[in-house]
Image 1 (tube, rainbow, N blue to C red):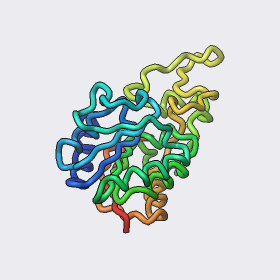
Image 2: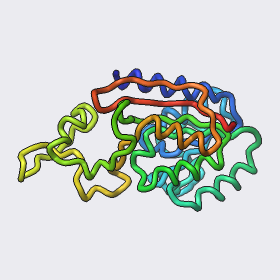
Image 3: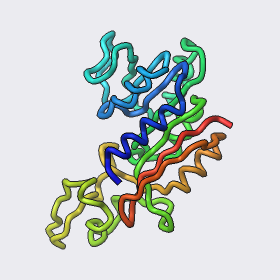
Image 4: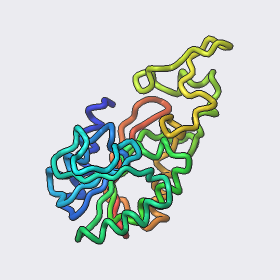
Length: 224
């Protein structure tokens, strides 16, 4: 699997939801190209929601296409639900969410997914997932140092630090609890179940194997 293949998979999943009245990208600060793609290919209105965005102003942040609206907010908080519900009143039509590589960094990924799905009609979701046959969920800071070098491909996490006690690379520190860290390893089966229980039907999936431990999985789903 290459990163280019994953990028193309993300674009093709987004295309499944276009055209649409409103598209919302949750966490696009460092990858605005996916929201831009939707905004330029059939979305009547586009909104970026991210805690890393600058304070609201008339001018969109660098990297975003002209006309993209944005809102600085922590979408892991329950307050995002009424805010988006109110925002939707201004824009007719279906509401399409983009959520790539965001659940891995949330303290409570199921709660975040439930909140965001409650205000959407369809969604693209994708992230690295644990390969088939393994655990359904792993809290990564708890992975022993002795297993981290084999669990995390260096291509994905090149900034491992050498642990003084074992002289082995540690990619996730035991005190890594901030959203800036990669907190969770989730399985595709678990994500499917969560989406189905929130009333969404997956219509297309894409998957690429990365290693014996990880794959990349993404889907497009609509409210049933």
